[in-house]
Amino acid sequence: MNNSQVSLPEFRPENNATGSEETPSAVRSFLLSRGSSAIADKGFSGLMLLCALSIFGIVALIASQLVVRSQLSLAKFGLSFFFRSAWDPPNGDFGAVPFLYGTVVSSFLALLLAVPLAVGVAIFLTEMCPRVLRAPLAFLTELLAAIPSVIYGLWAVFVLVPLMKDYVNPVLKSSLGWTGLFDGPNLGLGMLTAGVILAIMILPVISSLTREVMSAVPHSQREAVLALGATRWEMIRMGVLRNARIGIVGSIILGLGRALGETMAVTMVIGNDPHIYKSLMMPANTMASVIANEFSEASDDMHLSALVEIGLALFIVTIIVNAFARLLVWAVTRGAPARVH
Amino acid sequence: MARTNEFALRNRMRWFGDHAASFLCVTATVLVVAPLVAIFVYLIFKGASSLNIAFFLHKPAPMGETGGGMANAIIGSGLVLGVGSLLGVPIGIGGGIYLAEFGRGGKLANIVRFTADVLNGVPSIVMGIAIYSLIVVPQKHFSAFAGGVALGIMMIPTVTRTTEEMLLMVPHNIREAALGLGVPNWRSVLSITLKTASPGVITGCMLAFARVAGETAPLLFTALGNDFMSYRLDEPIATLPQQIFVYAMSPDDEWHRLAWGGALVLILLIVIAVSLVRYVTSRGVLKGAS
Image (tube, rainbow over all chains, first blue to last red; front, side):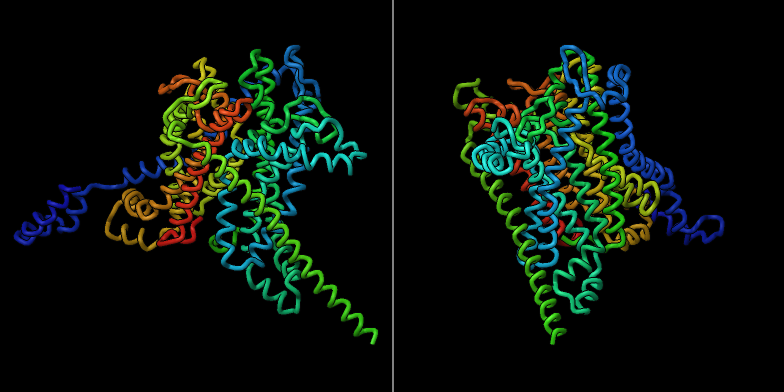
């Protein structure tokens, strides 16, 4: 590079002096002397392509490792693994039903609590909020979505669990105890507490995505509905929610995907009991929490393999849930202008 | 007369519905924001009262004794995150460059982008199992290196996506100017486009760094944890989030104090990263990128 820059002024007088047609022009020889960048360009773009393809590599790597390590339990139990409710490590008898149940119920509880609130917050932030408040609230949700799971767990162990034990659970027990859903000893730990902490954790995720989807609805839609004499709520319902509904469903499913795989906070408050109880106050276990709890202590291969198979199931389910949700969100925001928070 | 009454009633109902909906939305926001702010403030106060100089300089005291700190976990987190960043940042930035500069709008780029987003949603504990099976099992022992690889792999999709978003904000005429001067494409990408977007790319990497700094699940069976001071990559090592988990579940009050202190350190890291991203994306060329 430096060489060629030096050579440029050297060529010019020579060219002027001879004036012959055989020697190439100054510019041309300058360019020739720099060599072709085709190889460097190809190499560079190939390298970058390789980096991008590494994403597929990671997915393949995870899938293949999980399948290899779960061979033992796949061979012994087959698909019946997901219909058996025994979990008895000393006797080598394994089934995933208690954990499937725990994961589904805790995630469902979390969605039940989080979705109405999250959509309400998103509506407030996009349609009603004074401009001054918008940026700080958006910043706060972004921050809360980034706080690590283990810190939510820490807070839950020392604040939420006593709170549930002293105030929430007794009220639920006396008012709704007859349903059988709020029975049993009041430990503070358990399925309900796990559902609450999950709801707190997925709230920022759902509300920020819902907000994004709602602000992608063109303003002309809102103006058209308002021009017909609608009130603000009618405008939100007909002009915004109806247009954004697919994306809102997508963001809710994305929240579900988060809740399904959430590990640390749930492990810390759910009580870790591989049995199915009807009562939500009883301890339970989820797919992620049983792995976190038992994996490093599992000594025999069968136990380890069963845990990896649960991990494989979790991997496949979250991939499907996330892919579906992304497609829905993408369907709404694809034509939208650049995101403005 | 009856008609007018009906109209008046309907209008009143609509007015009522409008106000009820507004009220519900405001209530929802208050219900959500108040406890979240409460959690945040509680964490900061509890953590601030637990931090002191010893926290950063000493290793933890044995259970039952007072004093001690988390120096071994801070060093461990630093080492593990260092390995993770060495792996995750270059590959992630490379992927982002491909998406924004070479594959823009193409089918392959769309699939890569989609897969990266999906990969972001895969539970971190699954990454932990995969790395356990890939590195820990063949080596037959837990190691800081394995933890670093797990975190590095988790950084790749995030860094790829933020880099892409930042590069897309760079105006086209800057690239055209560079190419028009005869700069080879690879140079124009590296020293023009990437350089213009570098504040955004750097803070994006910081954000990814801060996020994996708090990851616990993948470290449970890769880095495992260690009660002693360790600087070796091929041995188990303590990390901040994993120690917070252990201390929170222990019955010892002194260890609880360490857990709160560790939580505050992680939160500060997150706050700094998120604020920097917002600051960078609110000005200059990168304005509006997220």
